[in-house]
Amino acid sequence: MSWFEALILGLLQGLTEFLPVSSSGHLELGGALFGLEDPHDFFTFNIIVHGATFMSVVVVFHRDIASLVVNFFRFQWNAEMKFALLLLASAVPTAIVGLLFEEQIEHIFEGRVVFVGTMLLITATLLFLTRFAPESKKDVTLKSALVIGLAQTLAVLPGISRSGATISTALFFGIKRVQAIRFSFLMVLIPVFGANFLKLLRVSEQAGAGTTDTMPLIIGAVTAFIAGVAACRWMLDIVRRGKIEYFSIYCLIAGITAIIAGSL
Image (tube, rainbow, N blue to C red; front, top):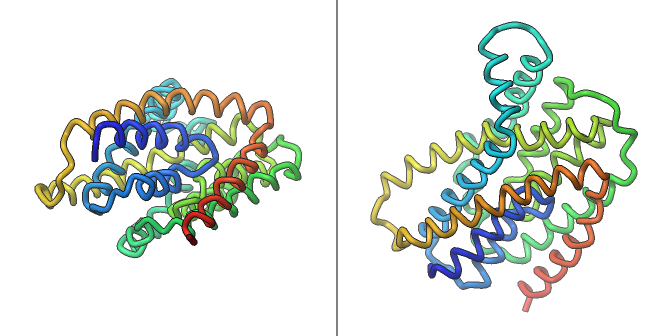
C-alpha cells in the first residue's frame, strides 16, 4: 500500500464512519479500486483507521464520556447512570454476533463490489424512510436500545451504514434527535474497542505475515482521525436540522454505480 492510497482510504474512513454512507463499504470499494489484494495488509489497515476514528468520537464527546464514566462509578441511579447502562445493553447484540460469527463476518470483506452496492441501496432506503418517522420527543428505553443495537449489528455488512442504521432506528422509535445521535455515536465505543483489541492481539500474533510499511498506517490513521472529528461534528449539525434523508440520494447513486462496475 502506498502513502497516497493510505491517505485516500484514511480520508474515506474518517468521513464515512460518521456520515450515514457506510465506511466499511467505502473502504471495500476503495480497496477494490486501488487493487489491494493482500488480505492481511488490508485487514491491519482497517483496524488502525477504525481505531483512529474511535479516537475521533472520544475527542468530540469527551465531556459526555467523562460524565458517563464518573456517574457510572458513583453507583447512584440517575439519568447518566441509566444512559450508560442502556449503552451497555445496546452492545450485547453486536458482541454476540461478533463472537459467534467472527470468521464468517471477515469473509464478507473480500472486495465484493456488487454486494457492497446492494447494501448501499438498503442504506439509501433506510435513510429515505426517516422522512416518515414519528415526532422526535421520546427518550431511549431498554427496548429501543436493544433494537438499535441489533441495527448496529447489521452494519457489519459492508454497505450498511452504522450511523445511518442506528440513527434511523432511533428516529423510527420517535427518540429526540439530539439524544439519537448522542446514543448512536457513543454506543459504538464499546464494540469497536472490544473488537479492535481482539483483532490487534491476533495481528500481533501474525506479525510478519503482511508487507504493509509503518508509514502508510500512520498516514491513514492521522487522516482518518482528522476527517473523523470534522465529519462527527458535521453529522451532529445535520441530524439536528433533520437533513439525514438527503444522504439517501448519495447512497442510491453510489450503490447503483458499484453494482454496475462490479458486474462488468
